[in-house]
Amino acid sequence: MEATLFTFPSSKPPLSSPSQTLSLKSHVRNPPSLPYSHFPSALRRRRTTIRSAISRTKKEETVETVKHHLQDCHLLAGIKYKGLTVKQLQDIRKSLPESTNLLVAKNSLVYKAIEGTQWEVLKPCMKGMNAWLFVHTEEIPAALKPYRDFQKESKLEDNDFTGAVFEGKFFPPEEFKALETLPTRVEIYSKLLGSLKGPASAVVSTVQAPARNLMMVLKAYVQKLEEESGGQ
Image 1 (cartoon, rainbow, N blue to C red):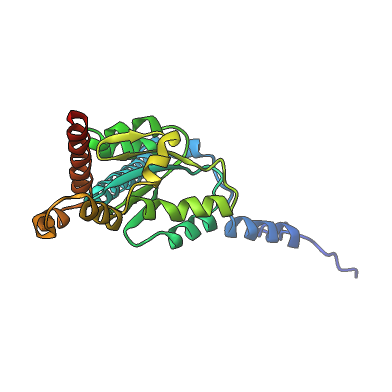
Image 2 (image 1 turned 45 degrees about the vertical axis):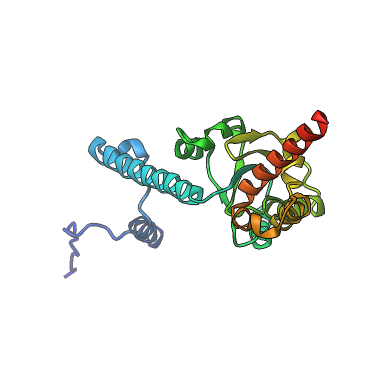
């Protein structure tokens, strides 16, 4: 008697091939990224709002930083920043005296900080990319010299000063020589003591005044001498 073998269809699904199984696991580990447009509109708006808030906060912080540097500031100058590397900026900062700060900030944010102040006349510098030099000392030539030396040594002729404000007046690049040759406090004292007639005790209070006041006094005294010699 011969036995007949019957086969019945299995209720289990057919096994996947190894390649198919591996592909499925790969998709689980690395799900395909969806285009930004596939996210719900509410989620997209939320992400946009968060990014805008972060950007706004950073801008406000930059404006406040500029205002902070303007406190007791004697001179604010712009430097053409385009093309400078991070290392060059670091080297420039290291060369500056403690009384001078270098800040890289957008023109619009700097102008927002100086608008309505004596520094607003710096507006002609608000072009291109600028780094901003804040000088917190009356010794202006000594504060400008480190960058000028760095510019010459590194052959950065294109990265010149774009302008500066000193005592409420705007100085374009072609007039920087006047700032870089301002007399130092010691030179002003020497000229005063050498020019004024009378005992030195009479000018003690003047010598103790800020350098800018001494320059005004010296100018007035020279003008007086010129008038006296002209009337003789």
